[in-house]
Length: 416
Image (cartoon, rainbow, N blue to C red):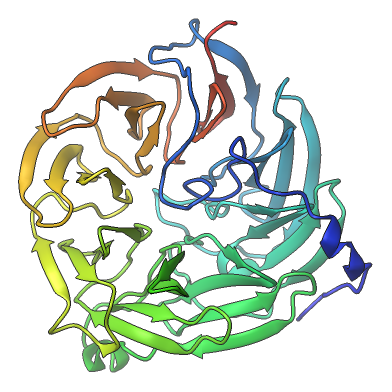
């Protein structure tokens, strides 16, 4: 059922611009894990370089999204039956808004590494978009007013919600890859009405007939410009597809064998970097200048060892960095796949790495952040641990790191 509310759409022209000090979506302004933050702390603990620490009610693994003085998260309370949007004051950590968005009779099962509130909000001007997988999607104003909500998209996300939404012009776009049906959909961002919806076309026959693993996926799409054309790069269980974000038409696709994909695509050096997902992740570099089926023609290189199941990759200069779920970090030449180094960081990883203030930040699942100096030689800068479980990717803004644990939100910053 669509609960779109028709309220003052003329305010579109009043939207606030995204600035270099904002972090409005999963993995930052460009969606690829690069921050303009400077003068960040390189060492911290529960008693060092913590500007504030506030409790976050409920449970959720959405990352902090930040614009201006507001930080937005989602969370689930009442054992997942109440799905909420939370806003905090960036300067003080004070909670500003707590909005009940969806009430569920039965939220269903979730994976032990997931939550009922894992997709990251997207902030676009005066509006905040929150997504809870098949449970529904909603638009709020930054004063906490509900604009619309839509829970008409029914699919079995099986292990709980995963991929986050993206905004393109007047559209909000989602991957919806369940164990039963798989599609990509675009809402009109100010009404919640569906503009286009495209079924996945490249699911293998074995999966369609139930003879192989179920074709679910949990990846966030990436908007990028290729040859002067904006394309939506979207990973499903069996393929990466480049869509026209305005219409949902396909430009090209690359097929692989996988399912339960989580990493977000990354683009650099004329290539897109993707991971195939379970059971044995394979990592691919695919040239982006093709049309139609490019599976046999546009693979630049691939990697079958130490590929990530959950953390997204990151490119810095001409180097590509990966961290596997069991903590093996790898530095490769992005163009060729040649390995420069490989080191075990220790711990298990779900959060994606970030480049900020000239350093790489890798957060494991037990509160430990490893800080490295980028380069073709392994250079450890520091390791820092906070209390709690940590599966959400942090945000890096101005001089601060905003890090979510299973119970708290931290602002890490050196004293002025």
